[in-house]
Image (cartoon, rainbow, N blue to C red; front, side, top):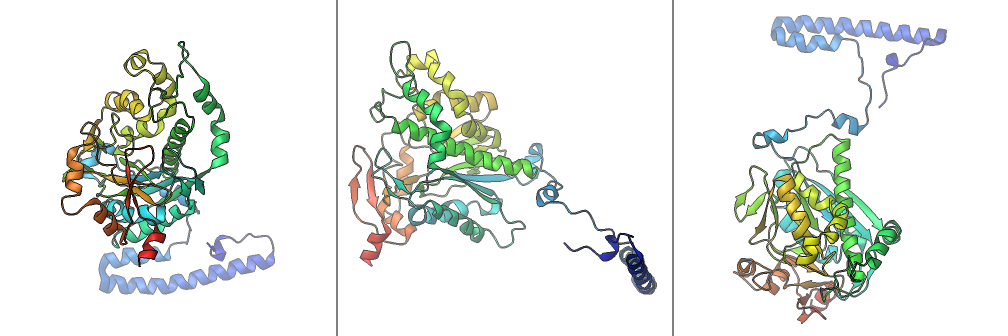
Length: 433
């Protein structure tokens, strides 16, 4: 910002002294003019006019310039103890590999994440991997990925915000390149791959789960998941620290799923809000034995979910009680949640965890298929009310087509999996048209 001349003059010569004198004369003339205005204010405007206008005759002393982060720190931080009387500060975090993001995921985020939460004025933070091709495996047949498509989320967020909202939300992105991940976690991955217990069985590899077997790729992907979750949280935390922000409610959401029902991050059951911010929410499906796919709730509870996995895994796999209860399931993601992470949230943080009885989202795959059986399954793995409510008005395929606003193809069975996939590739839609 250009400052007025009279605040920056240095008396280093006659020319500058003359310039300073001119400035001072100018100021005196302006003061005389303002004095006349003050007299008018006293006569016709009363004391209020005097107070307001007399400030204009004061010496101009510009405030020192501060960077935005420092200025932001001057804003009052809402107290968590006064949560009922103030608007909670919230953050929505997306993590993971953005499979078919623009084609399948983004339309559902706009409809069922951004719109239901627009009144809360949350900030948004995203971590993603820069990976352009995915091979086949437990995550489907693989295919091409356009990682930068997730950057289009920012414009969608800004468009979805109410026009009366005072402040634009913060939208930040962080990215990890594939080669950087392998360098960072090489030592840990070697330990996970090779470490065995006293009986000669793998300690970390979930060798007792037939979907894992003794393959390295599934546990490597677990570490990738943990890294993305933790990095996205760190991105939020860095912003909070820089701007002296205290977030009250946080949602950790996947960036590779189609959100088929509204995700209101303050809703704990259908039409029931967590007004006291004391409950964390997880899906009522994908329970093996609990769901590890998303969570939202109080800051402290979600912090454990997002940042304590690496710190707690060694003790978890060596826990004698766990080994006796679930031998051969070391790093099994859902069992780790159930045995170690969820109890930490309940017992150490004191936050209740509930399963939402109607929340539903389908995994989107790199080949633009949608796993439409994700929200169903055995009664012990998924609440029967989810699919019942979801399909009350129309079948699943019609629901997917409606939210995408285009036709999808056939439903096929996923190879080596009980899931069924709906082909919703954009090229197929163009061919139908």
